[in-house]
Length: 319
Image (cartoon, rainbow, N blue to C red):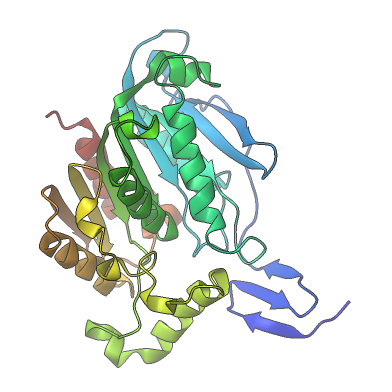
């Protein structure tokens, strides 16, 4: 065993012999019937080959009662390197959204870097989007989706890296042909909570805190060592994406936190999207005095409740 550390990013250490040590809470919680919200969850394997799995959520109103409800596809955060769809914080947060919004949800447990470098997380997420689309005729793997998911009212959402994935999945969907099965689902909107974006050139307050930018950018370098464009890869810097204006949804909600270092990138994303030629509507909500992913750390605080209600309202909005 070689104890020499080649990457030490506080939250994750990578040793020379390939071992990966995550210092964050790696606890997981099984699917269940949540007595607080009445939401039922279950896990399914989407790909035995890669180990890709999802956690499905259904509200109490739909248990054993076929009815078509909006579908939320959720991508967890963690800088592509940490976090899980099965973590208590992610699981409980989705329970609260599903129970209050009366929707169906699919939470994606994509492969993490550095063991599975980029584009694994994106490929897994796209495989789930295609898997969701396979339920269009009511003959997919999940009976919950067959009976209860309205694929004409689909939403993508995620926090941090998961928000980044949500944006990129919406872009890939926008580039899909209507002749493809995946191109037939109707993505109504995406919700980006504290999105993890970056770029080679610092912007705004990043200029004054170069050490923080170096720290955040190191996660992308660890997750995507083969990227020829580095921090200007369109996957991490949407402003460099010539297809930004092809975003495949009608509405976008970007949630920011006042004291989040990534706030500048969230604002820059909104500005870039509005200039891209995309003809949808982008909304912005900012939580005062809060830090990155505060809503997972203290879900019962006033700002977290307000943000959750805004997300629910965004999903529930009628055309």
